[in-house]
Amino acid sequence: MLDKINALEAEAKGEIKAAGDSKALDDLRTKYLGRKGLVTELLGTIASLPPEDKPRLGKELNALKTRLDETLRSRQTELSRSPVIPKDFADLTLPGFSPPSGSKHPLTKTIDDICSIFLGMGFKVVEGPEIETEFYNFEALNIALDHPSRDAFDTFYIKNQYLLRSHTSPVQVRFMETEKPPFKIIVPGRVYRPDAVDASHSFMFHQVEGLVVGDGVTFADLKGALSVFLRGYFGADVKVRFRPHYFPFTEPSAEVDVSCFICGGKGCSVCGRKGWLEILGCGMVHPNVFKAVKYNPEKVTGFAFGMGVERIAMLKYGINDMRLFFENDMRFLEQFR
Image 1 (cartoon, helix red, strand yellow):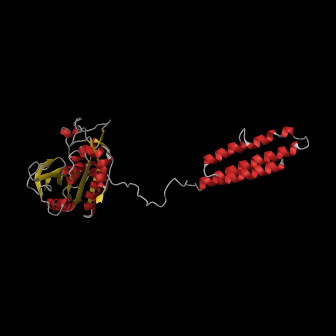
Image 2: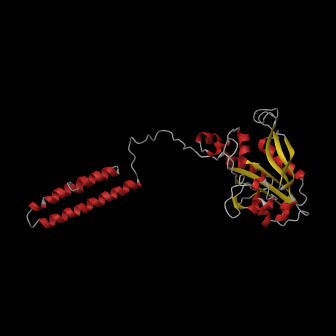
């Protein structure tokens, strides 16, 4: 009987050592230690042995069960640490391949490119909250109570004077409350307006605004800074023009156009046959805005400007539908790697 026990142990340990995966180990556990396993069969023969041999052989078989269980566990640990790859699993002689890499969203890329140009001119990037109060979103920016933009059809009101900001200009006010001139800041961020979603409108979109305040800042400085930006972004040959306009928070105010870089200013469907593309709005900071932040408009002047990121990205990349930016279609996004 002892010879059978020793032979069975040697056979079992050899098979366990050769097992290449967890399934093989489970099969061996069943073969030797299961209810109908080989060790169990030997335990069943003890009843037919002489009484004086039963205790010793029973002890030997129980010890064998313990040793085989430990051997199975040890082999399982080895396999988990150094998994054995089946021969037919993979051809290791084949050349490797690179997993697909991610890339910036076209709107993120546009914002980064815009900010990069202004950072090169000494601007600082500043951000602020997307939930605002009427004071920061309207009153401090000289937007009167009866102005159309304060209507519920043009602003997402929340509760108790709180709203989703409709432009990034409130960040300029918050910055001026805590900082003293001179300074140059650029403010990128999301804004919200209850517009119907179509090819050129969305209830959420992005803006980049800029503010420069100091001693003796003039409209000529504004034109110079924006001309440098527009030629840096759209190309050195682009032409720039300023048209008079009205904004409550600037005076005088202007809209800025660039010559159509699709047709070179000759007129095409992109520019509506006009040869010009509207890009942004700007102007000299209104004295009432300075008064709201406790600046003396007799001592400091400044200019501000703002642009829609989606519009610039659409013009830059020839995109005709704003909804493409938000649909997460990989076929679209992969074009901007």
